[in-house]
Length: 353
Ligand SMILES: [Zn+2]
Ligand SMILES: [Zn+2]
Image 1 (cartoon, rainbow, N blue to C red):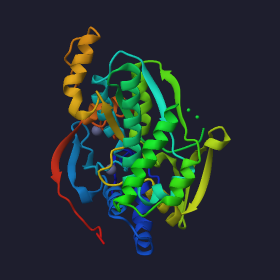
Image 2 (spheres, helix red, strand yellow):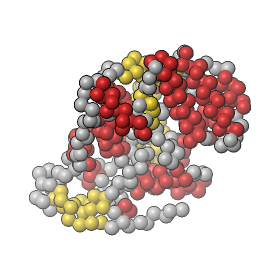
Image 3 (spheres, rainbow, N blue to C red):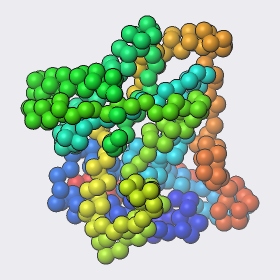
Image 4 (cartoon, rainbow, N blue to C red):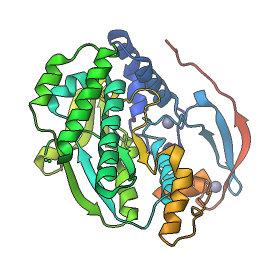
């Protein structure tokens, strides 16, 4: 077996999501309908950091130990690629933080809409983001006579409740009705009727302690993958055993065993539509506006109008900071430095059916 990454080169071999896709993916694709977005994720995760993506051969300058280092897939659903993407994202966001209080407002949708959302994620999520941003921007205009800045993150729904809620419900359902009217999704009259009768949950949580805690919080959600590799405990005889936290039981850590096919199905349920952004900015933080608005805000706050520069560390440095693993250190003698000695071409045995 080819060493797939640094950890494996160091002798650690535990089943990963990629292994599950490689051994059970084909039979899954034969028996399930897969939208292009899910197919793409499956392929990307399967080939991430394997010879199929090519890479470099590295050699230790001290003991001569050789180790191939393959390219990563960079897919946002890949458990191997997320820590680096997250570190880069957080760095960029840090420069845009203002030394002010940040409020934390949660908008939720009623459960009667779950089926509709799963079937039409792209449209329903777009409607959700629009309803949320319009509600908050309108609130800012009427309450503060100004433009608020909004960082909105989509995450999974749970239940828990007020004035914003009615505005939000009105906007969401009107936008949903519009989407049905334009034929983007089938008529959802039953769901709309049932939703109108429920009170929708919008609540403000305790404000964030500091701008940095805003980022810590966001970072946890923006680059979360449905399942990290270290949660996969065992893959054997077509069964996958993994750990999870039971929210209904005080977040206790538990294990679950599923048929590999069912495991794949559940993982793919979390795949977001192609090009879908889980995090969006509105108000003075909207992409078109912030170039002028942020320096202006900074000036009004008595700061240098120019945004702080983002340091540009290499991928290696970022990872070292993040997970404490120095990828340039030789895993064999632990003293030498790994240096690129050759290019490795892409080799593709993957059946792209
Ligand atoms: Zn990857
Ligand atoms: Zn060495």
